[in-house]
Image (cartoon, rainbow, N blue to C red; front, side, top):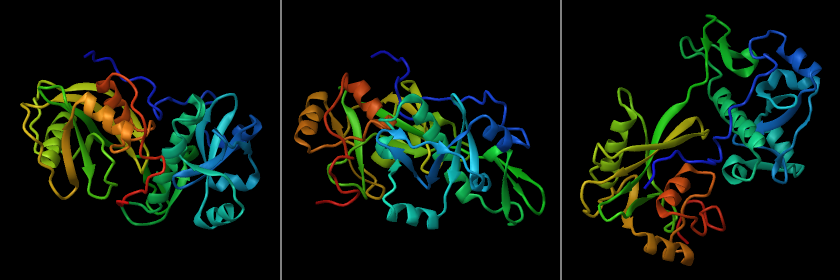
Length: 312
């Protein structure tokens, strides 16, 4: 197996450019408006779309208080962060609002990068309205790329939480896939977990696989495959392949992981074709790790016609 980096990850098609040099300018809004800026409405994980494209519109004066700069393509692009009241009106008016989880892989490169950044920034702003130092309100500064405390003047920047995600193989070249306790019975994916304080990504990988599935990973077998942002609300997924020491049956922890098992390529292909096993959609790096091991595309995914968490 080669160890090239994964290509065409749906949410890793940036970076965005700030060709206009607006982020550090106090007059960024005026400059962006003068440059013909266009806006996208964002609410939580959803954003306005038209088919498989973002629904860009002209900016208006009322956008300024809720706008963050995303970057620039042909013109400056901004996201307007909407509240629950606006969202209710939009839903009532049947405005097309889409989730990055569902349409991220269908967007073109520029829209995918812009939408990913918009959701990531929007999630951060929504969760950081108050200063972690003194509890006072914060305000948006630096074109949406920071918040400043209105009381003590401290500045706070968006944070990203690193997490590992890994396709583990055994000595028979079978893949280890698991099913979370709150997932539908047909859903299986690679194992993943957050990097904890004081850990390296490599240590996290070995710890998570052992804690969740009772499988010991050979520390010399880790191969980094690539990363992509996962702004739900603010993760960076670090993708790996690794090999287990031996072929012992996995033992799920029974808490977070309800089922863990080895799959041969033939078995996974057969079960996926029957719909008895569904792997993550193409927007997830997990699917790319699985199909890279498999050697091609697999049918089906869990975003098509399946309930979100419970068994049928």
